[in-house]
Image 1 (cartoon, one colour):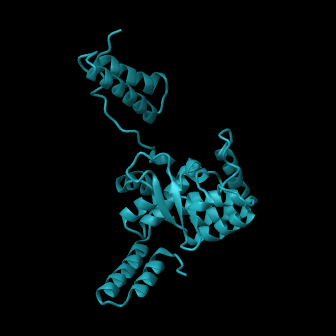
Image 2: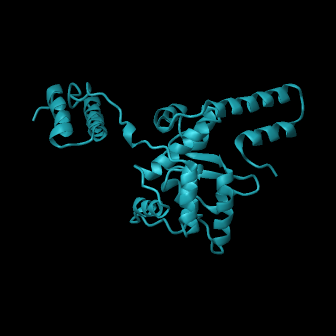
Length: 274
């Protein structure tokens, strides 16, 4: 069968209508086909790519994006009996981790209790210049859970999470049970929306490049796919953080000392200096 621009267009319409695929799925398969024919064209097996004219990017559906309040997540954490589950949920909502890949890769060597930060290794972005490794502050919501999980860990334990390495586990189903146990209704894409909600909160206070560094993606991706799920936010929070940043700049320009500047930074970020 000879593939032409018309047949490629018909195949795309068939995926969308006859087969009932979601648009994102159809676009993904068309992208794979376009790459396949690009290779054939470079090898001079065909004269032109029949899928070259089919454009589109795989984007999440806006109706699937839900902002999850921090108060609701704390309520869920309180109802969970297992400390590893508590920490896992907290890392998704307050640490912005991708669940489950980034969590199971974390070891106790990656957790710095003294400087209140931890290292995250992302297999999804390991091909980037930074190797997919980023340093995330141990935000106040995480500190107590990290200490509790460390105290509960078996002697000689290497990984922070020891019970989630079985790929057959259905993390979504169990998480939804915990949500219902807390008296809440499960939301769409439960793990993804926890991470997206954290991105929204951070964007209210910190510059975009700082948020992108902590969350492990580019600023453009954060603006497009993460903060777009937020509810209308109060402008006063941005104005409050801006006042603190201006005070920090004045302190530096007036030579008021490094320690003072550190305290101002700690006030903005909500971290505690020792």
